[in-house]
Length: 381
Ligand SMILES: Cc1cc2nc3c(=O)[nH]c(=O)nc-3n(C[C@H](O)[C@H](O)[C@H](O)COP(=O)(O)O)c2cc1C
Image 1 (cartoon, rainbow, N blue to C red):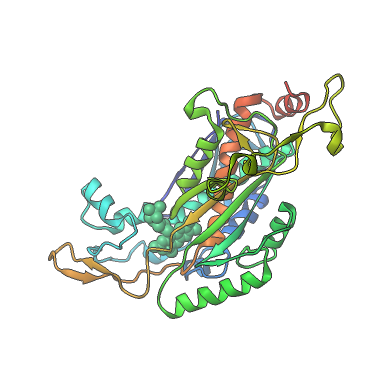
Image 2 (cartoon, rainbow, N blue to C red):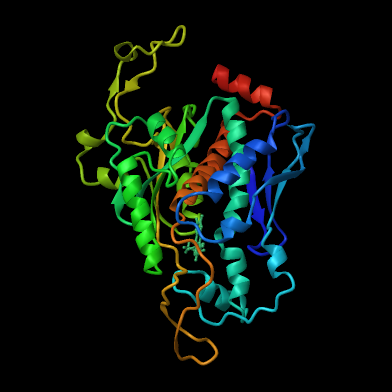
C-alpha cells in the first residue's frame, strides 16, 4: 500500500525520499521532519561530516498548502558537503575496507573505483529514510500510534533498564546524547567511545525501537510476506550495519520454557479493561515477551524491535586489505567516519519500523482520505 524509496549519493547534490500511497488530507510539517533529521545527525561518537551538514527537508511534491493530496510525496535534503567535492579530482580507491560494500560492490558492478560503490552504500542515505519515517509517523499519529527508540548497549556496555517502563525509557533516551535511558551506562558508553576514538577503532551496539498504541491485527498470519514480524525484520535488517533483529526478547526467550515465555491471558475485568459495548471484553496480559506480535499480527501490546549493529567498518587504525592494482597485501586508507553511530541508528531503525507499520495500517484499514482512515480505525472496521 505504502512504498518508500530513497535516491542519492553521499557526496551528490542531494538525497531524495519518495513516499507513495499516502492518503489525502494528512497535514505535513517540514519542521517535524527536520526534528527527526536533527536527532539522526546527533549522538556522541559521530564523525566530522555532521559538522558540515545541517539536514533540512524540502518537500517538493505531493503536498499543497501543508497537506497531502493523495499524490506521491517527495522530499529532498541537500548535501552541503557536495560543494567540497564537486570539482575535486579524487584518486580512485583501490583498497577495499573490510566490512564495507567496497569489494563485493565493485566486483558486482564492474567498477574500478571503490568510491563509486561507497557513495551509495554509505549510511548518509539514512537521512532520506528518516525523512520518510517522519512522514509515516505523522500518519501513524493520526490513529494514536507513537514511536520512539533507545540505545541498550554500545561496545559491550549494557544499560540496566529493569523496572523502567517503556515511556520512561523513551523519555530518558531523548535526554541523553547516547540515547541511553540509564545515566550510569550512558557515562560508561561515552567512555567506551572515547577509548575507541583514542585507539583509532570503532564500536557497534544494540538499539530498540518501540511503537505504542498499535491497533490489533496489522499484518497477517495467512502468507509469509504478509507477516508483520517478517516485514519488520526485513526493513530493520536493511539498515546499514544492522546484523541481527529480534522482536521482543526473542533470544532470551529461546532459553526458557513455554510456560515461562508466553504472555498469559487474563479476563478483562481483572485488569480493569473496559469492554466494548456488547462484547465480553478483550482478554488482557501482564507481560509482553512476544514484543507485540503473535502469528504475524500486531496483538495490541507495544511493538518492540531490537537490532544489533556491528562496529563501523572504517577505522583510523588501518586494517589488513589487498591493493587491487598490485594484488599485494596493503592497509586500509582512512576516510572520515563515525567512531560509533549507534544513537543515530536508533533513529533510523525507528524510521524503518514506522515505514512498515504505516504500510500495514493502510493495508488493514485503507482510506483515500485521512479522515476515512481515522474513522475506520476508531470503529475497528
Ligand atoms: C547511522 C549510521 C552511520 C554510519 N556511519 C558510518 C561511517 O561513518 N563509516 C563507515 O564505514 N560505516 C558507517 N556505517 C555503517 C556502514 O554504512 C555499513 O557497515 C556499510 O554500508 C556496509 O553495510 P553492512 O554493514 O550492512 O553490511 C554507518 C551506519 C549507520 C546506520
